Image 1 (tube, rainbow, N blue to C red):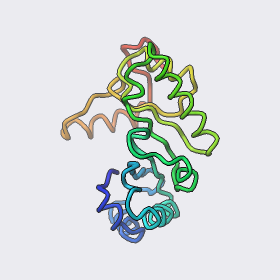
Image 2: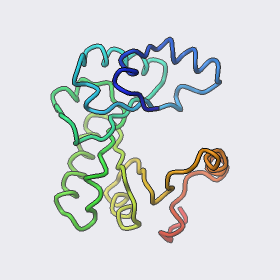
Image 3: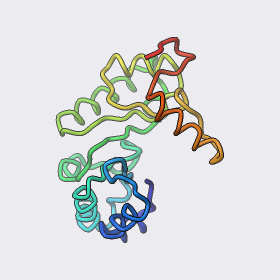
Image 4: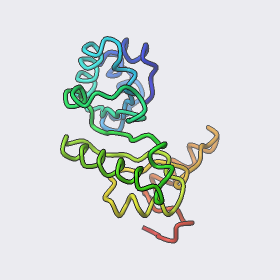
Length: 175
């Protein structure tokens, strides 16, 4: 779930608890995304809100990591479950050794902070293979599925639920 900074600052655990009760959605299947910029103003209030959401079982992802005003000192106190490295650091893989160094560094940092690492913007089989070889936890991008119209989303979700995650067929790896 993506929220604007204003929406996220006004969100309460009670709001989401009510929504989960009405819809039957399991909170543990929900990830709320915040960008570094969400933490720029009134970070303490936002951190409190995110702690409340996590108490429901909701996971929190720090989206577009590396593009905002990162504070590593603040990161260690944020209630974050997943660091989503911005696609701008994935785009040059596998050729760009600087991008590879950043990916590996952030991945290692995430592990040491007991967080998952997600690479955004994975578009090629080469990027997918490299990230898997490096032990990347989660991968997101066009290599799996391009943006879909709403009319196709339900069908895709049913197929995913039935068949489970798999590698893109164009990458030649059925697992």
